[in-house]
Image 1: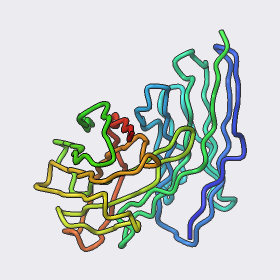
Image 2: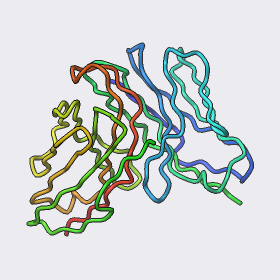
Image 3: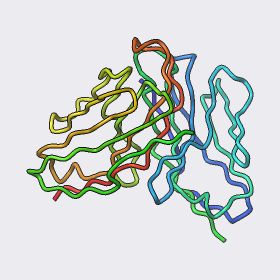
Length: 117
Length: 119
């Protein structure tokens, strides 16, 4: 079974600074996706970034980038130029790309990010 | 457009009531999901529909009854719930290839959720 581990229950960052959230996962599959989702106090789960396992290049979305280390099964999220609106719970998630898992997401326990002005 | 809508936003019900949650997407996605989420915890998968057929039931109690009337709509019928069922209920959808036989699936997009309180 796949597992996702987020070892940082809480993190904090000063506005305009950079912060990195950690995530490790375990799988025996070769074709899968990894995601970071953000959930602010409004509770809407918002996709931040997506990585396909067979792509070597790290995904980036504006101020958000990942460091994907497939051999080490590590998938960290870097937030640059942090903004107050980045404050939220961040979930790392894994899904097998095909087969009868039907895209079932395995989530980590989440990291609460606080942004200080 | 990656919008998934859910109604109602909030629902309060007694243990003897029958109510329904509704989810809708118009992205042409053929996989739809129900999740239950308790405060400060990750979402827990309840059901997956693939091409309007129930594909995964994560051993959910029968007081929760899902329904997929068409490819855009997903309902969750609630009956005789318990106070511990109070939670945020999230719907999600994703693209799926393969006609429902377990093809390639991609990113799940979530709705805003229904906050359910059972008295």
